[in-house]
Length: 246
Image 1 (tube, one colour):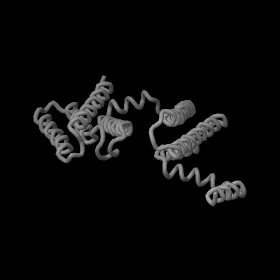
Image 2 (cartoon, one colour):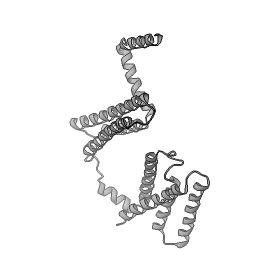
Image 3 (cartoon, helix red, strand yellow):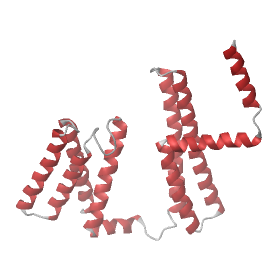
Image 4 (cartoon, helix red, strand yellow):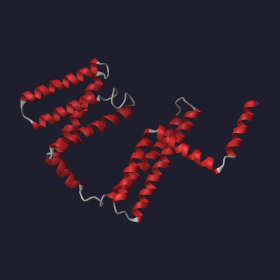
């Protein structure tokens, strides 16, 4: 009985909240989502970048409006996604097909708005920059330094993305695949493109083997995770270098 009265009192107090308190609750919800959700932090970063670019570029009113709507939709769907996940976790902590369906649909809504934001951003900013994709490609083709940075950055992004998909380990330690092995084989492949000296080839190969062995010996990765990381680094690097040097 006392519990029911307490619940009724809380409901009454909730309904009697003033305008100021309602705004405080709303802001608290926004800040809580930013603090706790990794994807929301990324959305904040992208929003800041878009705002900075908008300040320096001569955007038309329609272009600015399209960006504002896209960014707002992105934030709203991410917060709805977080709210739905919280409600599902509140109702049940066990696996249930309907709980999975609710979370999957909410995540799908975020994906749709993300693709929309990317498309709108491309349409708005594509003609605002003097450097075109062809010029960027020439820069990478004529500078192996830029190519190496592109390759290593791509490998790191792919490793972190795959680790998030498998939900094992952290971005910098453990999990599937081995990031150190991927970077080691990537650097090894870059060096083989730069030189035909067999001594450098074998010395670099020995270093790759030592890196991979250290990950297994330290029980940070399994043999399979280490091999998959090495294959990922080699394949991605080889494909990028092959395309750029065509």
